[in-house]
Length: 305
Image (cartoon, rainbow, N blue to C red):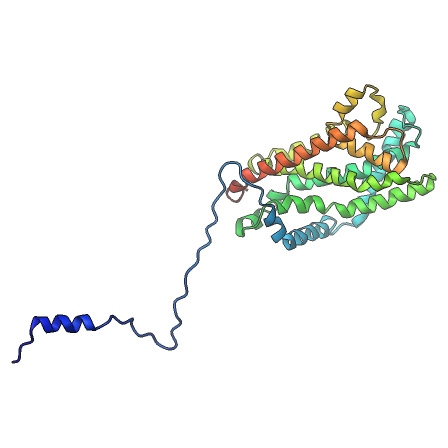
């Protein structure tokens, strides 16, 4: 038997290069694996507004869903959007305008109150739906990931249809009373935006709190009712003669919205100067603080809702 020197064996091993195991032609090459890890945010986090733009189609879908569901299987349908502020205007005109004799700055009381009720109904409806929006979308939140801010935003936006219908009635009342808007009407979109910002800001606070404490949804009707009488809807803000007190009164954002609507559409004498400045600052504060609180609590929604 012929023996092989160890030196020769080592030289042969060095010349042989390691080969990869042969792979069948039908067997696919292993792809590089990518993992997406979604972790809860910690501390005070950014709002990630870019995500909202990326999910804009979802925002549109949820808004349209809320609009279709709102008056589904109702006899009067969207007519409720008109009846609610109109009947409230009738009650206010009867008790505050005729019986109590509340002044209306020289404007017929029915249109004086209805002009205030149009933006107020938009605000109150948006606040009520947004506060319960997360709990109502619990199944969606538990199944997939998306920016949760989309849900309360879509809830407030869905009230825009009701606002437009009620606003058309307001234009008809203006024709009946012979009131025609002046150049002040150009500022009307700003006051609509202010009402939206206020409803969304407060709605973000209440919706996030409602996930943890279900008592919130029972307090919203009381909050809305108190807020309505704290706003110059049934009475004019001109009853507050002191300028400093009027500015402090403007810390109620809806005071600026209501007075702004009357000034823009009815050419009321009370121009909302200091009131609108204070109202705008308060509305922005509600929105920023509400958005950060919402984002801070967002990590617990899927587990608690």
